[in-house]
Every structure is written in structure tokens, then in C-alpha cells.
Length: 451
Image (spheres, rainbow, N blue to C red):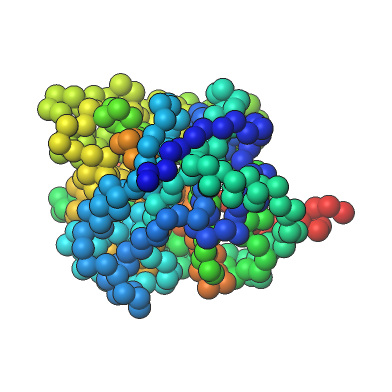
């Protein structure tokens, strides 16, 4: 007999940390976090655990056995097999897939040489099939449990558990870069040669930093969330691995066949005074270089969406608007479309993956150059976190401002789009500006701060 989902109210909380703290040690626990109350723009938190099944894919070159079938096709088959008797509700998630799709999954789907070393040993993708969720709606200031009666009893029991103390997180050594400034600039110059030769118009070049750590990554996530609240955050942890994402960037949203992408290109740090902050914002808004970067990626996304959207439906209702976050200003555009009747959200994700804002243009050649110039693979960084609901709804982020834990080390990446008139020293500094606050929050001595 198909289980009937019910929607019951729970006490509303300003942020999801209390609820998730009671669930985070469960198998497959996942938090999609809107960053409220501090982050602008987000509306829903989605929490779940104990998936009916868990599906992982490994990129070529991994030590574990991957699935040889097309990842998005297998995920769609898993989603189609979810038994459901759904209530009438406008909540974003009534069961389906939640997880991540790493940047390396995109390399697996395209003719990429695979020169970059595999340093971080996470699967290229890991998604669970979930039949329940705890959802917080911050516009309505309401919390809901979506679950069949048996699941309700399990979840409510777990939410009442006494929580174990959280072990303080600390770095054993400071973050160290994989590239020196000189090595980054050599790669910057290589990108400039490719642009001059006509191979590409823009390349998103990143660099990786890493540090050994001790303690609880849940404590680390809470520090990051406090330091840089963003509307597309997320936390997943299993075994010795975790993804701690503080992303400001939506990749793709699909609701009732209406598609939206929100690419970010163009960044300035926030100022230390209101006057300096305004000057930095004005500098970004009037920068021809940053605007050109953004417009290139908008054109790329229009092409990606055009593969699966109705002809003539792709539009750009917002081009290069300023959005300001706790630590940076960004230029953000919006690209919309209407999904064709024969296409589904996972088809949309496959058509546009990975996001053009973190590859460059044209996308395939940009990814090949990234594989040549970046010493190690990006893992989950620059992939996507999000959900795909059984009703055909989807929301995903671009996994920037994202830390990845593996075997006792924490990895952070900073990157930026390079175009013909980019300046190497400025671009190097921008990669650090984007993650400086993350590094600082992780390096804080909690005991010292309490004295």
C-alpha cells in the first residue's frame, strides 16, 4: 500500500540549526539552509535523513567502483520509483532527491583529458531518495513536517532527544595554498594566451587551499554560517567526509516548468566604512570588465537553457544587478525559460551542468583548459547542491564558497573569471577576497574568544 504523506505543523525556529542538530548523526542527514535570519533572499530550509536509498557516482580515476550508466538517467529512474500519495501543498519538497552533483561529474560527462590529480576522495555525486522532510518557511514563519505516519513518529522521537555536546573544531595548521602567487600568475598568463589565440573568451581559474583539522565539522559549519550568511547554504557529512557550503548563487530553479538561473559574475569586497563600501559597490557597477564577464555567462546560460526550454521562452529579466552580502558585493543576472513538456528538471540539470559561471565560455573548451591548468580536481566545489522533488520541482546552488572535508583535511577553493583585460595581481587577490572570511572563521580560537 502506498504511504500517504501528511503535513503537520512544528514550532517555528528562526534558523534550522536546532532541528538539524537532533538529526545530523542519522544516516544520510542533509541540510539545505537559507541562511536566515541573517542572509537576504532565502525562504525555505529543508532537512532530512535516513533516505530510502543512496546513489553515488565516482569520476574516472577513483579507487571505488562507480556506476557505468548515465548518472542523471539513473537518478531519474530512482526518483520515478518513489511511492507517493501526495497532499495538495505548495511546499517546495514532498519527497524526492537531495544531495550534490560535483564539478567532476561534469568532467565525466564531457571529453576532458583528466590531467588534474584527484586529491579529494569524494564521489562525483551523492544523492539520496527521501520520503520525508522538515521544512521551514521563513516568509510565513512556519515549520512543517512532511511524512507518512510511521516516519512522523520516528522523526518526532529524534527531535526530542537530548543532544550530545559538540566537539570544538580547530585547525591544526593554517591553510596553505596549492599554488604560490607566482604559479597562479603563470597560469593566468597561459589563460591570456588562450584568449588571444581565440580558444576561449573567458576562463574561471581557481586555486585550492587546505589544512588539517580536529573536532566536529558541525561546529565549523556554524562558524562559517555566522561569518558569511548566504541564501543557498548546505551541510552534508558522512564517514570522514563532509560538504560545508555557504553559496550565494542559485544555479537552477524549476517550478511548474518555469526555469530560473541566477549567475554571479563580478565581485568586490565590502568596505570598512559606509563611504568606502559605496565606492566599492559603484566601482563594480561601472566596471566594463565585470559587466562583460557577466554578459558572456548570461549568453552561455541562454544557450544551455535553450536546449530544454520552449523555443522563444528564454529571457533575461535582470542583467548585472548589484547584490550585497556580508562580505562581498556581486553582479547578479537572472535568466528564465519554460521547460518543454517532454523535458524534466533532471534533463535541465544535465543540459546546463556544470554551471557556466564557474567554467567560462565556450564551456567545453573552458573545462579542458581548467583541467590542464588547475593541478587538482575540484571535487564538489563548483558543482551543485539541492533537491529534485517528485512533482517536478527543483532548486540547486552553485557550490562556491564551499569547504570539503576528507580524511582529516579541509579544502577551500577561490576562483574568478578571467577575460582579455583582466589583471593578474587583481585576479589573484580576488580569489582570496572571496574566501578570506571563511578562512578567518575556521581559524578562530574559540576558547581565546571566550576569555
